[in-house]
Amino acid sequence: MSERVLILGGTGEARALAAALVDRDVPVISSLAGRVRNPRLPVGQVRIGGFGGVEGLASWLDDEQISAVVDATHPFAARITAHAVAAARRAGVPLLRLARPAWEPGRDDRWTRVPDVAAAARTVAERGGRVFLTTGRQDVDAFADVADAWFLIRVVDPPVGPLPPRHRILSSRGPYDLAGERKILAENEISLLVTKNSGGELTRAKLVAAAEAGIEVVMVDRPAEPEGSARVDSVDGALAWLQARAGAA
Ligand code: NAP
Image (cartoon, rainbow, N blue to C red; front, side, top):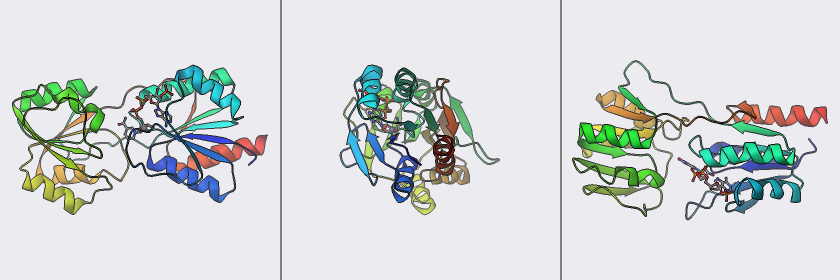
């Protein structure tokens, strides 16, 4: 492969792809937004912070002579994904979207699907009860006005915005195992789990534990993504795409 690859990261898949490319001696730069205080850094070269919108990213791709971009950002990081499509088009650089498959409900799952976090907050306000909120720090403020529920709020870094009146913060970083998730649900007498449909194995155990306990899940569906890039759902798929491009060059 004679590439110079930019990986838009912040996910386990992005780190795994960076490691695989470094192993193969492919020049790669991973980019992180800089949202969490102590991010898990990928191997290889890393840059941290926004690019300054579509324009900034397009010029950066030019300046750094990037030959391919892999957008391996989280399925809910909609803005950077849209920027990647527009900037790659502008800079004339091929773009691949790597996004893990969404979770699908099984027979024992009790999911209420909602289109966004605001709708999740409305559903929680209707249900009340004891809520395990796992949507991430940036989305907690959507629940700030929900007074009729108690929240266990799991976050990597403490939230900065307004919080619901009755809550406890649980600071921790995945992956989470089934035994631990069962314990959290039982000890906190959780009656409702709220999550985004992030997909992947690292945070799936909470869904299994909720299904076992017959707990309802408010599942926030993924935002729509723009057309304009090839798509794969695994690191192997991304490696094959890069390999095929290098072979064709
Ligand atoms: P976002 O709303 O889609 O993007 C907001 C802005 O942050 C972008 O316009 C861009 O700034 C900057 N940005 C985002 N990802 C970047 C990256 N990988 N490298 C450089 N700049 C980036 O993003 P978000 O939802 O805040 O997520 C931020 C990061 O956290 C993403 O990298 C994502 O993979 C990771 N993450 C997000 C979630 C989630 O639930 N949203 C969960 C886990 C991990 P400029 O316009 O200045 O370029």
